[in-house]
Length: 484
Image 1 (spheres, rainbow, N blue to C red):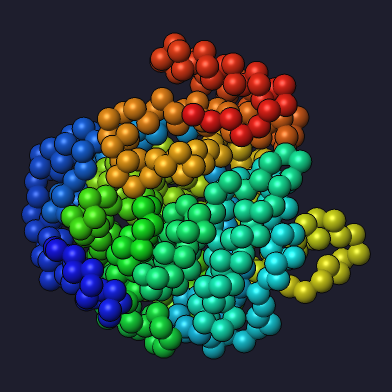
Image 2 (image 1 turned 90 degrees about the vertical axis):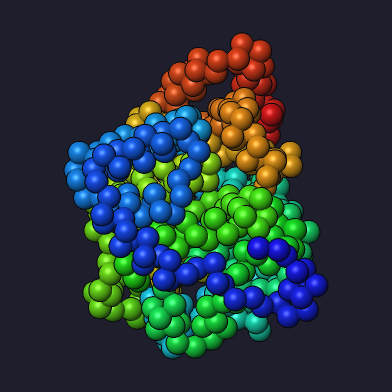
């Protein structure tokens, strides 16, 4: 598809015709006919980490043979190790405003839901960031409802300026991704100039009729405007974009196919697909009748989704949030997840409120938080990191690629050549070493130091391993923010 930039800049609107429901349904129907040998052949092809076609993904989605599912899970784990090693990137969301003009049926922030709405002042943003940094976080995802008056692009930019300006004894927030409503090319240019990491926007559902029913009013009701937001972001100069579907609104097989066609569209148009894909499952929220949704995804189906996405788009980061319970999250790390949130609060001012609850002895700790949705993993970040280490993974707070310009097609070129391992593994070790010295409990530090020793030994390049060991010593001596 050719890009008519002048036309797009003038009208800011395109039809999302790359999501063709007839094509999706046809591929899924054909996928039912595939013999087990064909399924096995596709899984073996995926093992080469070169990706899959939408037709091949459809076949995997229709497979229910347990032996082949087990093979799929195994290969998904192999691909993750081949590309990402044992690294696991950590982040936390920061909600700055719950004002919203949309009326999304599944969301606790929906316009018709009556509660005391608020947005953070810049002083409150600073308070939240200080708490997040004290937990060890270096990477945030900025979240907000859509409200032109209460949450303008100027307000978002001011929040970003505040976040990046804060310096603490042990460091600062080094990267802020942004998850805000679909907007114009010009406003995406402003976000790029503000130094964001990845622009993230979830499609929620790729099925047009369901989308219409789920979004009865507000700017988000425009399917095409919403679905082509990533195109405008990339035209605005943002190299890395991320998307996802909210599994539980419609048939999960259709949604995975939508993700694949969306990724294919970006690859064909811009030469690079999504930097990340998120796989949130629908969760209960205040004012939402959770049990009324007919497409809720079972645990075994969700594991299948994660594995297929990893097989299909091997070089794309796969994000799992605290929507999932701890044991489910631990299992899915083996099926391809490469980024997780930890210690998340999904309400505006949630981190301060959580801190007040922990310090409260009177039984009355202020107003109740109104989260966008309820989380299912309530562990402290330190507990999450200790568990990650005990499961054989290496926590990473690395943000080096964004500050070194390794984004977009430049990142993908390094990833596909395998050269990215020469920087990602060392950077993970260095950022985790910072965490262990500055934030970790004694229990986590003991486990973490052993984890670092193991992962240092796994760096194959002698020169890089020696340099990493030298920088670990520099961190022990008080230096910070060292990276390759």
